[in-house]
Length: 281
Image (cartoon, rainbow, N blue to C red):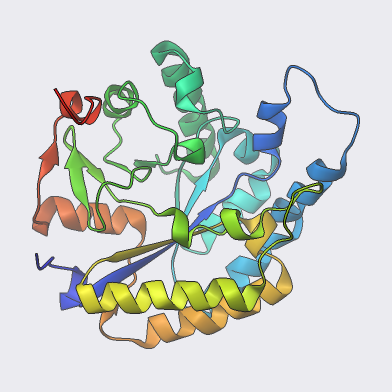
């Protein structure tokens, strides 16, 4: 199937940041906080230094990204979130404290996402229109809540490598293979060391080349506390410079691609009832 990418491009690459900092650790350990502060400080590198390293890199390339940010991070680091917005990037929802929807009731999900949306709006003056579930953990209860909040797209599922519709929301699909966390996340005691930067970027270059060949989407997802480290930023800049310079590749924000799909996209819609149904009757 040929997809009508923006500007007549052959394929698309979306560059996205999950700016979650220490929020996943705080949520995961909320009932029994550990005495160790090692992982907290490791994750705080993201808001302290990593986000600005990545913003400078994108400035150099004139590349705009979508930054999915938990409301707690926006509340704790409003200056960094305001700077993301001031530099022209899209901000979108990523829970309140990186809590997975599978652990919340629908009312709790509505309340936390409303709080997060209000916090982002107070900082930027713009209401977010997109959502990415923490850890890409989804339930069918999420979509009605997104509708209630006036959102137009989700970016949490992996059912295609082109945008499609789920319950009349545009789904801009993701992929674990082009997320930095499986490769770089190392918090001590793990059975393997983090992957090397050349190894990761070679794999992502292959994903981008394949997307261009087949006319699909390559969704790149990075975390400032992981990919915001200097050597990783430098490698990302080298890779993304080739993407930006390639006329055959569109580089929209996730929100721009969702809006484009709403107006020009081809494909199908997955009804909400089918989404949660097993693959056999």
